[in-house]
Length: 201
Image 1: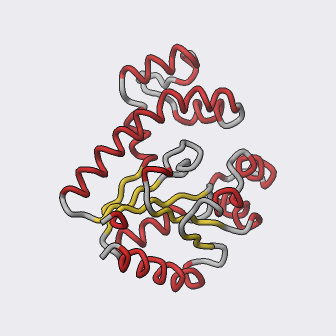
Image 2: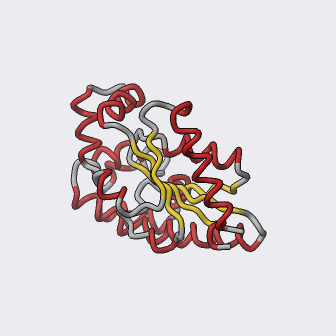
Image 3: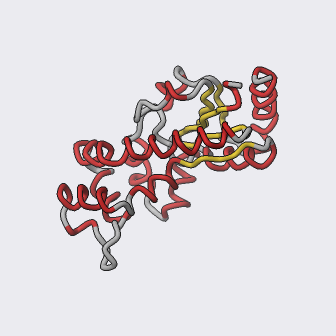
């Protein structure tokens, strides 16, 4: 039963969401996305009040909602600011995620929980199985440049601000290297999922 609950994580531009979609579609897992829950959390009145108290009006759009791009521009360049934001949002995100996961498990679903900051937020103890996506650094840079339309040096700064992949590898149950695309990693993913489902009974 425990292996009906799987977490997937990975640094930016390592293919985490792409792999999560394959698992959702091909292995009949319900998908809980921490990022989407985080977006909902930012609309809560008490959260907006705390964010305004700490970051001011500059991170709010004209409609009164949090401007995620403006907020991101501040916190991704300032570790203290990011810690402040995390302290506001992470407890609410994990509480909402736990409720959503519990309801899905109670209804008999296999559940895949996707979170980019699983290890950073200390959420790993909630999940018996953790799947990590990794990617060669230069391919990661190339993907991020394409996604953000930024210069390679900016992409490298974004990547460098995250927890190193090597630290995450040691803490994951399974690792998928997506460097060479789905044709290269799909067999590995299939073997991993068979192992997970077999163990789950």
